[in-house]
Image 1 (cartoon, rainbow, N blue to C red):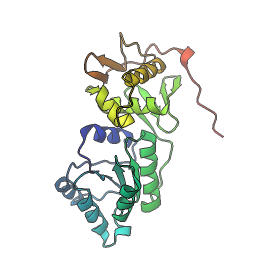
Image 2 (image 1 turned 45 degrees about the vertical axis):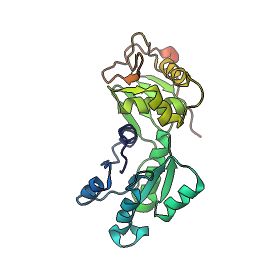
Image 3 (image 1 turned 90 degrees about the vertical axis):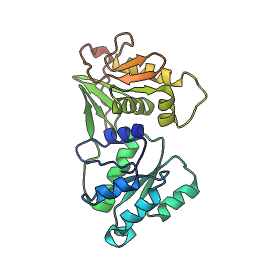
Image 4 (image 1 turned 135 degrees about the horizontal axis):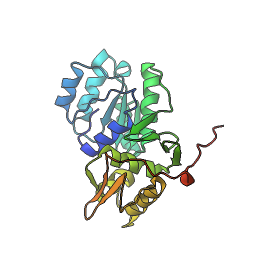
Length: 242
């Protein structure tokens, strides 16, 4: 993967950490070249806004002599206009995802490219454990013991973003930037969604077990929490699949 923003790298790392992807990260072309000298990925995630993206795409496309048979690429970009997307496809990108992205969409596209181009089969219903809670990423379900709660897309993105930086403070500005992409014009939009997530996780802000408020700075995911105290009254049964 080519990306130079630590927050996004950690989010991608957590999203793809399902036992099927071995992720290696480079912040620039030199680091990418060093990795490719000893390791060949089944799919590469490239930040198209990185200044080294074009050079890396050339390298990946030439790896087998023909661009279409080179390493498959999922491109990421903050510019979602048609011109940017057409340029990415012209450079050999197999699929492109506009950021901010939801964890489930990133995972689904990475798996789809791997299936289609590399011919590798993997299940499409992965879950990941973060401490004592387990997240079903596609169905947006969080379970702890016998209790299961369903999250909205924003709530899941919030949980993943905070968990990817567990132990570190994530500011409100960073949350806005990575989930909404810009200032949405509501000063309390982050706080409102954090409050909603806490309610579903039965997380008391005065005695947090999952998400701690750092006054004047932002929020911090607590890596040493416990799920003791979850009440059956808030349990949401897993939806019936048709």
